Image (cartoon, rainbow, N blue to C red; front, top):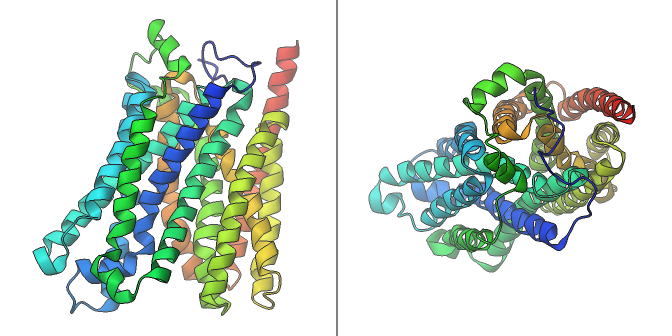
Length: 439
């Protein structure tokens, strides 16, 4: 069995990050930000899109259900697209799939901005919208795992966590960019203009920027790890998925649990909390959205900080500290907001910072698989776990909150407790490996 904890055959461990590494991280993070912007911009304009792409006499609740159903379809396509692209990424090269994923996102996003509405082509409009959304989902399923593998196989092994945290920060920045775009357009445009043509702007901008990023990624090189495996004929001789499920099930389990931690940190504390505070704590919508933007900025800072620290003291210790911090601060934050909003901004900022654990989750997953099946291992574990946890978490939280008002906080605290235990396991394993290496 290959050593799943190394980056590859000849990755330098000791050299510092160079200008070429910084360029690779920068372009990769930029692409990730724009892809996530393209993926999430739909939800910011869901109500407008619903009114334009479904019959005008349809009940409002049904229109929203169908619109968010199209949004959710993107999540369903994530595991399928991710596993397929990962298979070819392990057989044909990381860069090819890295280029394909951004094109597969940019093209449907651009088309969505040009689609005729229900008033023009009837029921064909939502069908085409659904098809474009499925393509976006397939693209995002390959982009995040592919980007994490790409950057970690470029940088020295001792900077793995910082590399993945840079990518994670870029993905979160994409969500922030989508929020800024929606806020800006709602501020400068009337409702009439927004419904007439303004809603097309964010999709067209996202599509065009995606193709700009595709052009810039041409200047990136295939990873040294994959190139060496290709030269040494060390690529997986059988289906990477078969090797993964036969020999690396512990790595899959660790990666899926780590992804569960990520979904709790992002889906509950960042995406759902503003709505929960508005609906169940009676806090003003504008105030919660402003605080949410502050939390997202702090999440980006937290990602980078967690990655840099993990490379110095180990993933396990940082994961323990981050999970404990997030579980405690979010519980207190959510409880206090039902009584007093004075500390809304500083406490939400602290929650966002500890949510930076999302930056080291991919580093843990990357180290769980050998280079020959790394893309497949990470993509399968991440996308399947995200589809399950990301789909069930909102249902669990919202269905239980009526009887248990603190259910979001209890859920996050419970998941973070699992993270503390896993962090302890990883820390002990890390020091065990170091002790073996010393002897």
